[in-house]
Length: 413
Image (cartoon, rainbow, N blue to C red; front, side, top):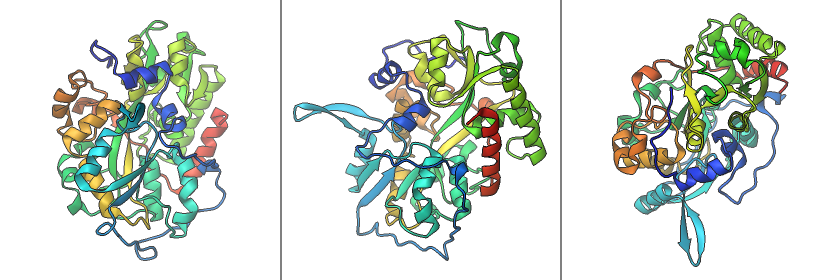
């Protein structure tokens, strides 16, 4: 599906990203809006000791929101609307919707962009959360699979739905009941996205399926897949006839062997993380596995980069707002969650980040904010597209480590 936006001037924040050849994941891992440095950490898959499980009984938290109008919020870089304004003779960056939240509620938000990778962030907080100690954050944003892991470990506080009327009313139906948090007791989606196929129409004809990526002769050596195990293996499971939301170890083995075959045949040029779109735009590869929001940004400067819904289906994922144990401003965090589920605020945020908006009613609000986005299926997908989307099965800690190791053996990671 070609999701190219209608012609018009390129917004300044998009122009800056395009000039820097920035993809969503490279932005979310390498850039930063804060002055805080990010401490290095080992990969979660390489962690040698199990993490300590907690529960509401073993790890209680005290909420001081009634007397302390403060909130410490950790998010990924470049994942909130920004604006450059003139102040005191110099240009500074402000976060407009977050400023509105502070003005309306009187809550002072310390906003930090120190979530650069799910596994890296896990390593930052695992010792404290495993020991029922505070991590100096009231709210952070992590992807589905890591959110599921933290719920399983008992590291998150249960949300009070009475404080979330906008979420109760406006959360997209497709996101209301994930297997790992069926009643959304611990998580509220911040943004969602799709993983599919992108190809360079200057170099090749339409690529319709993941199987074509793995086997088409004219693409041999001109394909990249993602270094994210769950993204790539979801499609490998689909391509070998398994359900990525419910599969066995044997089915995992078959899918892994199919990936190994594609590598051995020379079909796959590389497994890329930060730079996969640069290779596509520069002509180093003809087709690749891709994230939807990256393609939207890239199409501003190169409309011949196309996004395709693979015949096998799509991967649908969310990055979720979570309140950790020992956070002392849970109610303040719930106020922020509720604020961003106001359709106008949600549409403003979506217009900047260019990912799927999880809020019903935001599409109508987008008519005033950016009409060119209203019919973009990669921001407001229809039911037909969503019916083709799959989640990756939640894994326990031991299985996750084994699968990550299996994947690394094939990809050289």
